[in-house]
Length: 100
Image (cartoon, rainbow, N blue to C red; front, side, top):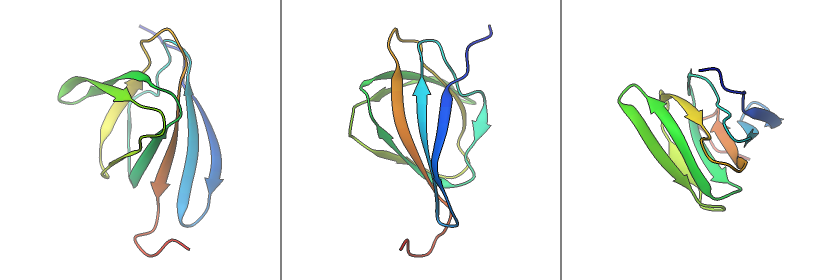
């Protein structure tokens, strides 16, 4: 099944962090990818996303304003199977040193 692509907008990309806003229209997906940096997700909307992982399917219930973090190396595809747009901001940390 071919799904539309989720829409990333990079807001900041410097030597410390990469901040990307992700917009998922109904039915959209990221495609399979692996995170090479520790990252934090800050949902802007509330709703479920489906995660395809090597271990199987998982549902992630996003709550607007409630952040969560994930480690390096997570491989997955993120899919919005809902009927409304889902939006979150992803903050990838490039440096293990202090952020200034």
